[in-house]
Length: 293
Image (cartoon, rainbow, N blue to C red):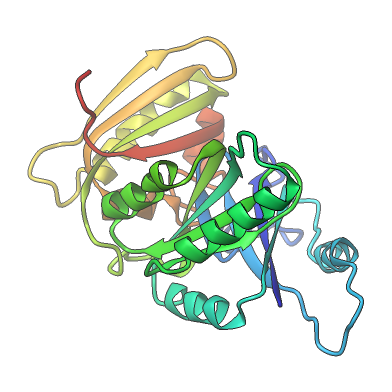
């Protein structure tokens, strides 16, 4: 049996003073990464950890997870832990060997719609779903706890094709509810050469700290995203009510150039000075071309 824990981190808001290291070095904290992967969306980063089970017969999984995670708490961000369990060690090893050479990781938390099945039928249904998913290349499914029934992970390097495969799970499984996370390996973000370059659209939902600083931030962002493009990237802003103050739409942008903005210390991270002046928080969504209905 293999147990892995997906440690999702959500960055606390940092004001101008709190981004400095104890010795006053701003750049030290700008370089510090929250996890092995950078996340786009609600979460900011993730780390995948394996629980050691050698020499143990009776295993209290939650206790072991709590013990391990306590070692990594630093007060710098909030964390959510997803426990992933499999009895197929070979499949687990195969997937993570592939994932080490891929820039992207997609994680889907799935609650299955069982309809009228009893407890025995539910167990069999989960087993069949996991076996079927594990037959796919670059994909693995785990049992999990709490609100979800299974966790499905997919690695890849072509965003639009990969996300299409993730979304196809909804057609192949009777899904009651699903939540997905998109992550990029931090070591890729310097040059993004490992990423298949594609033209995508981006939506930023922003909680604004200073509206007068937003214009300067967006001008800097537009200049950066337009590098290497034949035409300047188009950015539109919409005032909104609720949790966010602005909806920012970026159309037809290079995926490689956009992802560089998420390297720690760059424009679309909490640790960039322009970001700190303009925003409390920004959540990102990437998508391709829509369909008319």
